Length: 437
Image (cartoon, rainbow, N blue to C red; front, side):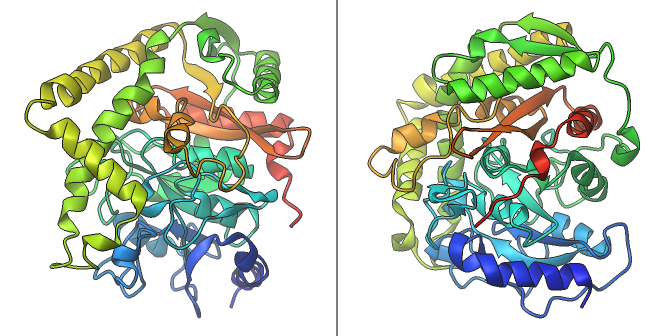
């Protein structure tokens, strides 16, 4: 057993019982090949199929399900020499922003065990920030990689739609889902993306766009890069400490030579409305296969949030309501895509919040599922438009809770975003602070 692998299992033993980050621990895991990621340990959000290892999607429907093949992203990591140490907890089927909809219990925030680690992929983020693994692989449908990264003080990348294969990933909303890395630094994310990106013959939605050598793109000057500042997005709903931390980050970017360009993106406020028409519609279709006949338990095992989204989606797709809701939402989606295109005519990247608030206390949204949905306001539009975004640590609240921001780019501009993150982390130290459990 390598030193890194031993350290990961020591941290899992020490912390997992407290924060509930992992559903399955891969006992006896060992490195198998030499490669670009040799010696590195990782966790997978439990929505990725792993041959011979349980994949539950954090739902009782698949509580005992064992996959028959490997997801492409998992196989690529194995081929690069990385070692899987665990399958990470999540909101069941990816439904949620706080990881409290898991049938295996909520993931607790390592910085405050009474609070949420974020969702839907709280497990990978909590595992990485506590050292259970060197990196994690999440699935971002409306913020599920970036939200937990912001609340757990790590770096995470939501890639351009199709940049990484979704083959072998249990779908939430197929036109939104994207695969991406979570790690401590942007530099680590660049290395991981180099391994997992690219066309896959098993996934017709994966892009043939050339894969850049992302690590070699780090270190490029930010001078004269145009940073969009959407003042209208910093509404009164954004916690003052979060706004202040992002404004300070903007100042650092300006000192590094970036040109600050004020922009307006009013249509982004409609993003949450169209997302919660289209995404439930797609999940109602995707979850229809779990009928208890082909695999898994029957539909009585669906949790309350899954049932809620199935009903919402089925209603939006039903005769008499399709034109009023689903079709109209798709039309607004086109307008929102154009909104991003217009913004990128004026700037190269856009700086905005990840979350409008600090991590919620567990149980806070128990009787208010709508509030749980609304905190996705700043993260759903990137999935809607298919553009990439990197979440970066940028401060802490007075009570010691992490604050994150996101930098959004044009399609297939992951290299530029990773470089912005790398440069920011050369002049700040937020990403190096670890929780004291």
